[in-house]
Length: 381
Ligand SMILES: *Cc1c(COP(=O)(O)O)cnc(C)c1O
Image (tube, rainbow, N blue to C red; front, top):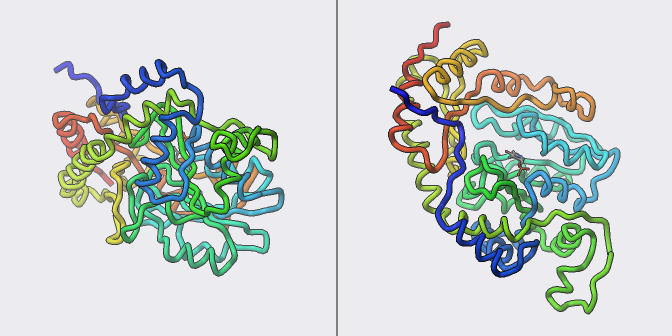
């Protein structure tokens, strides 16, 4: 009975990654904007229907690029959920602007669209929608609010490649959207991301910002005869070496997704009776949403029971984790932001949520072990 522990995440190898990296090395183009970057960008553009997908060094950097591209400045306010990763907020803070935290819905754990308008002030410039677990925010309502109030909408779609809302791909709704290819995401290249530019008026400047404020992209396309400094910018482009790895993953997207959905569906099915008997909630996916099986979480009845559950799983060799810590009440959130109210749902969900192991390479036997370990646990209230 010396079974090895089941980690929370194991980076999945689709198969072709090493060959593709070798091609990038032997092809002598390892820096940004090479042939693999072009290939990955086209694959992302066809998957999301965006005007232009620009590979970046991370989702964090794609969010920072968005803030520069939208000319966010001191005094501006941006509305976002408190229940998200720090990068969503830091991108705002780094421009000297103020993140305004709004609570989430108790069912999807997404920004509560009914609360957003109460948070709008004359300083509000935009909204950032985070599609938690790749389950879409209520986009019809959020788009209508943005339009009515003259605000831009950015999607932090780190979880949601392959997710849909009313049949339309996530990442195609906002003026801008971001993706993450961090090792913990469905498709990865170690560290990486993309900025999806849906507003075609922003494409040219996005290319300039990402190329250190130069018009080098136009130069490579033969549109200008030398390249020079034209705007602010930084080095936000992904090395072609990593783009080669990413191509291997993107080409296997259907297989990766099928594996993840298989595991997600098994958890949902096999944990249901235990959840009902123990006051545990399972993920809710509204009818209009197709989710990408990015994460499987359970909501335990209390914080104490959640901690005991994580320990119970760990003792049986199953690594489960929790996230996020509410941003509005964190030291950074208090220092740099403000919040509409005390975000009670965010606080409650953060205390009770547990994420189970979910990755494309999780075997059936491992999945059985997770289910068995979880269902042995009894919630005593
Ligand atoms: C992972 C994640 C990020 C950051 O992605 P990186 O590629 O690691 O920078 C941002 N937002 C959300 C919601 C995430 O889950």
